Image (cartoon, rainbow, N blue to C red; front, top):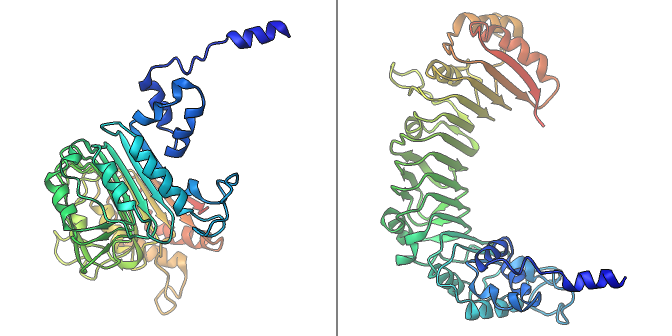
Length: 404
């Protein structure tokens, strides 16, 4: 026992012996509250949090259920288990008072309170003034406004915003005030200006955002490699984009079945991986030989809950204009049905032969077609229908799987 005790007493604190830079890296995985709590570990850690280059303020840590040991856990500042604004305000005010790092690598602020936090706008301004490389702000009540960056955006590389109100100055800042910004994500935000323009952006995500005045969402991002637009039909008349020659992956999703966005489709001609969700073919699909764009670079194509029921028209246009397509996925899509009033008498096998005669799919590189269904009764129907329609695609394998 004596030997064991002596060994423990003489053991070195190797973690504390690490330089400040490495310890700050360790602390970057912690929330701000957790990082401050490290001050009790030893004298080495006492003031280390004051200079850490990462601030992650998370209101969820200040709920009454998260701080059961506090004597005032039943205060009137929030419902049981909900955020306690007084604790949060007291902590953040002191945190920013003693935190001395001139620049930040990461600034995060996560709010879950239904009501506006009193000093939230001031905290956001203080964080952004530290020239952060990464900014991640999520405000549940949508009352927070993004402060003007000014010269503080000179190091900004990634900007993720959720439930934030953005005025016209945000568009101006993107256009010329963020010289190294490559990753922009907007979710459930309110946009005063429907234009997104940047010469440096490579990744752009816009989900469930609303525009003050209904209009066309305009994207002018020539260096973009990854684009994700989700539920863009909400309060948007249309979505248009300039040419994106470096685009690799695009996901275009709507919350209800609408006509395929024609102008946007032409801006995606360089994409390699394309996913379309919730669309149907426009009425003028075959008007003119040059109507449909040619996707020379596309390798994978996925239709999710799309309406392909009119003689596979939309699908056929894609296949005939994607010479390099290798994998096609149809997930929960509406496929053609045999009409009882037709010559086939509602027989899917006979209908498939009709499609075989009518359709001319030309997709020489297609190797795999995966079809995901929901109901077990759909399996035989799918097989009978595709038996004829896919017969002229000799090099492709058809795999039918149940959607999980």
